[in-house]
Image (cartoon, rainbow, N blue to C red; front, side, top):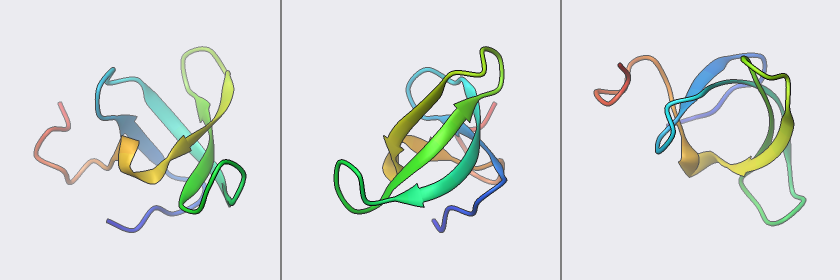
Length: 59
């Protein structure tokens, strides 16, 4: 799955919604800076931790 900036995704494990800001190499290749929609907390996460609305696990 290709992650895009300024898009909404869901964390695979917790189900929290996040908005992607930009890709980053900090902490390793394939990481993204995201902002949680509910709290506004900014964090860096691997792209494999995110699913989009077309994924079967999106609920």
